[in-house]
Amino acid sequence: MAYTVRRPNLTFWEKLYLPNIVAGLAITFNHLKKMLKGETKVVMQYPEEKWDAQLPEYYRGAPTLVTDEHGRERCVSCQLCEFICPPRAIKITPGSLPTDSKFAKVEKAPQAFDIDMSRCIYCGLCEEVCPEQAIYLRKDYAVTGESRADMVHHKAKLYELGGSMPGLVHKWNPDK
Amino acid sequence: MAVTSQPFEQPDTLTKTQAALQHLAAGNSGASDLLGEKLVLNMGPSHPATHGVLRLVLELDGEVITKATPDVGYLHRGDEKIAENMTYNQFVPYTDRLDYLAPLANNVAYAMAVEKLMGWELPPRGQAIRVICCELARISSHLLGLGAFAMDTGAMTVFLYTFTEREKIYNLCEVISGARFTTSYTRIGGMTRDLQEPFFPMVHKFLDEFIPSLDEVDNLLSRNRIFVDRTKDVGAISKEDAISYGLTGPNLRGSGVDHDLRKKHPYLGYEKYDFDVPIGSAGDCYDRYLCRVEEMRQSVKILRQVLDKLPKGPITVSDPKNLPPAKTEVMTKMEELIHHFILHTEGIKAPPGEVYFAAENPKGELGFYINSKGGGVPHRLKIRAPSFVNLSILPKIVPGHLMSDVVAILGSLDFVMGESDR
Ligand code: SF4
Ligand code: SF4
Image (cartoon, rainbow over all chains, first blue to last red; front, side):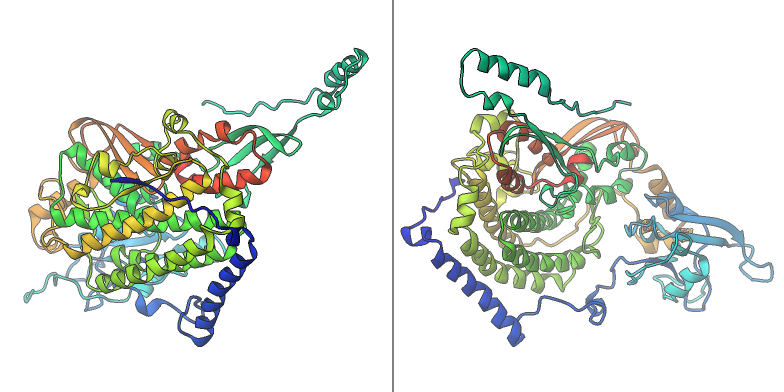
């Protein structure tokens, strides 16, 4: 239930102000002591020290494209991620597989796949909706560029960042 | 488009001087008052004490403020309009950016509003997880509010200590949602993922360490002469004013009004937890500070209770028509794939109607009003932002104070412009 917070009345001693400074300094000195002894560590010397090892598997860093365990690209350019992306960061030009590929009849692949990293808000919706598990948010968080054009990740860059990732289901695989 | 403009009152020096001279000629004394002219001072929009981009147009008579006009809108992004152009789930990331000091709580409030429209209620585990999110967000937001308030009144150290604690909460957010800051954790009807194992030891460790460091902050501030002098009897808001200006959250309770939505209109099963609502007595900056400190202690109490008996089971509602199917199903079954596409492109099948849902957020009552014509996109979505409403009291309480008190008052109101301007 509701209760009224106590408003402390300062004692004469506290009103003198100086004792309180000493008390305050005692607290800060305690912290300093602990810090010097290395018991508490507050500051991380980025970029020499990094937090990367502690990042969970599902950390939402830069979105990337991944290939399956045979090195085949997963994305079939269905454009669902392009549709769902709230800030419209993804731009896909659908294309088809080379005719000599044995999957050419059943699958497509993106001709171009651009993610504008200056628009991306790392929300993870693209990963969530992709029906092919082709797009993943990986652990890269320090995405920098010198111009707007630099900030657009093209298909090659996306695959380079993504690498390969075995999925839940092996598609077109007799032993799935 | 409506244009807001700030009428600037040109000080009419000539008339004033003439009046003063006539006044003197009539044999009166004390003409200096009439000669004095008021100074209009812009505080903000880029001023460290305005916590973002609030602009205050202050009219000063000497050092005393005679009029204060807050000017908001510098951070307007048109969130409400954006919401009309996307499906309900797509808007979740935008709610992170309202009160960006407590994104988890915003996610929850928004998801709850849409779920109310759908008539859904989460299973017990889902509700418990959301309570954890809300209370962690409350601690995080109050810690920043406190630190910034203390820094504004001259106590830099407190800010560093509260930030050390907040950093741990960010680590927890990371484990909960995969992002430290923009969590986007909820989805309509559930959460993106269940709590993972590393979360539990982390949160217990945090709770154990948190109370001692809160006591430390308490020791540094509550009985500190300088802090007390700068906050006691400054910016007092009476009970009646607090209610009539629509204040909510710690600012309302600091004025002695016992109103907490978690108690008055319990949601997420808050009625099951044992906690108290701290209220103030004088309604000044000091009371608002004390309320926040106490609220954090209560949040810790709630968190411990939730964690002690965290129910097992599903975290999402069971409505297969409106929830995306599991990924493995999508990848192997045709019907599921089609359903997946339809659901993500058209959105959930919301019924037509109007709902308003308000949650007790760290800053106050965050409400979402949704007007739906049916379908996956809201016809109109209105966000009742607590910071916006809380700021409306400034013209009432600031006049009569000194310039330096404004900083204390703003700090004690603990607003965030991302939410106010939305
Ligand atoms: S990444 Fe996934 S969702 Fe996006 S186009 Fe490719 S297959 Fe579709
Ligand atoms: S993470 Fe979000 S913003 Fe970034 S590309 Fe994916 S959907 Fe778009």
